[in-house]
Image 1 (cartoon, each protein chain N blue to C red):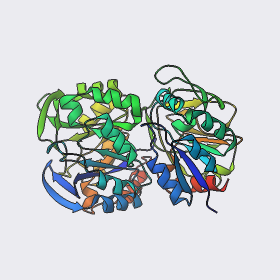
Image 2 (tube, helix red, strand yellow):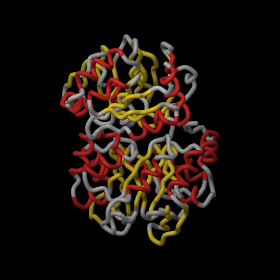
Image 3 (cartoon, rainbow over the protein chains, first blue to last red):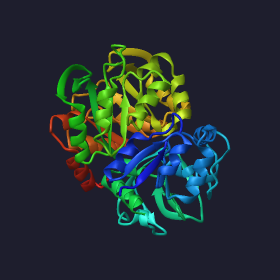
Length: 200
Length: 251
């Protein structure tokens, strides 16, 4: 039976169209979640993210589904994408200091690098600690589009390099997965990542 | 760092057209079909610009944009006729990853850049600058090189960065569609004057033009249109050639 992936729709900043399309392409069934009652029927969760840490957390917290979502994320396999990964952290520093979901011991800070920011474009990943989500993707390129990075030392799955600066490009802790890059914008490699997620 | 090779579609719905020197239009095909073709050739991104929406003051044609987005698993930038945060929001919801602003920001309300950047993040806001060369300065134009703004390109580039734009698309009114090479001096000036990525467009006629631009001005990306539409070059050929010149590009 096909897996039902709950794609969390929060506020105007959620860019869910392309993620939905990519999961479908990978063979999954997507249910866009806007109210808490819908969370029960999904097998896995994808947290999208476009926008700022502050706005994303504000939207999520003011949403009626927040408490249920937090509970669901603690048990169901969950994939955070870009900002969706960043908000799993303890604290974010975009437009002031904002508390995150505090599921990963990390802070989200501006990329300090001697190169153009935002970091935009395809880049490699270097596997630090392998996991099933990244299986077969060691040599692939993924699309990055971000100005902030997650600073974490305990749950690093991959690192990437931009302008001589190394940063965390994927994390993994128990049922939680996060990627700084956009698999939905990374050609076939990204579809493969979603297939891996469906198979978890 | 890999220089992005971007396919740019100038659209007068329902067709991709090729403005020559920003005037005279030729129909080149449908956005859906061309976007798909360039995606399969290995484009790093696709940019879709409705070149008449602002000029005719009409609504953005969302249908065509959504259909085009559906063909792509790479970033998709969309612009033309964007006037509000609501326009941004609608475009993201139908599959845009970046929204490209020009006329409204430069002629009426630059504050929209700040608002959009705060809500959607800097990376989602691209400002398109159409530069026209005068004796000692460059002036910002809008509506495909038709309307003057009086604004200085260099100052405007710094201002949009300050306001929160995440990227600049630099187009040159004088070299656009002519396939006679880029304005490399202007490109270098703008790339070196801001910290955000600059994508340079207008002028690719042959492989060497692209190489020279990248080596001299070091833009983050190069947007190509005419050479692709006329099947003079494919994205794959461009990337293979750049690799042989020692320029890093994605697969």
